[in-house]
Length: 234
Image (cartoon, rainbow, N blue to C red; front, side, top):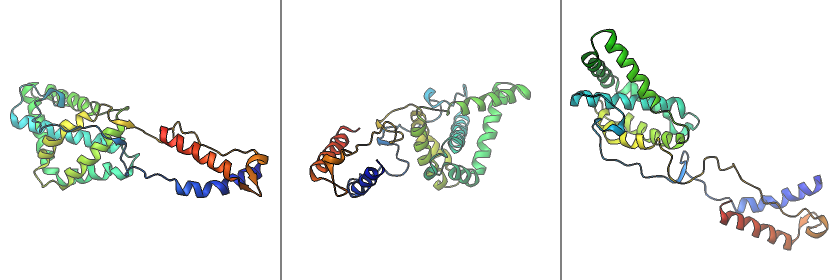
């Protein structure tokens, strides 16, 4: 049997080199990504998840921006399995580049809870609960790849946005980010190695191997079986 394996290795190398198919771009998790585009949002939309009843337009904008920061933080923690997304470095760069705008947003959100939930401890408790909710709202398992890919793209927009304009990124793309938390898209393949079965040539030494070479007939049969498997998507 070892001699047959050596024969197979010698025969398989040229075929493998000739039949390598193009692979998706790095961090492209879907062959046909779902359309996640949405119109710009204000933060008042229920599906965006800001949830600040009675908030002023400025408070809604601050809440939207703080939700974006939370989402990028979650992505930095969850998406490091794919380094090309740069979710960690983009998050750190976003925090450094937009520190003043983010600090102002946090103060506005804090003041909102002091105004609506009560001064002092009640407002702080409401703020803490709000922070927990928005973080947990971006946790996903089944749609992790879609979320991470979207977050990676938004992170690039965030670090190139002019200072004081991060809220524009939030308005344009928070609806899209929320939609990415639901699994979708055609031909979701995850790890392409799962469920894969190798097509091997016949190891019938008398029928298919002559002088340590795979015979023409057996080689053609092997190639035909491999092509049929590729055509079926298996």
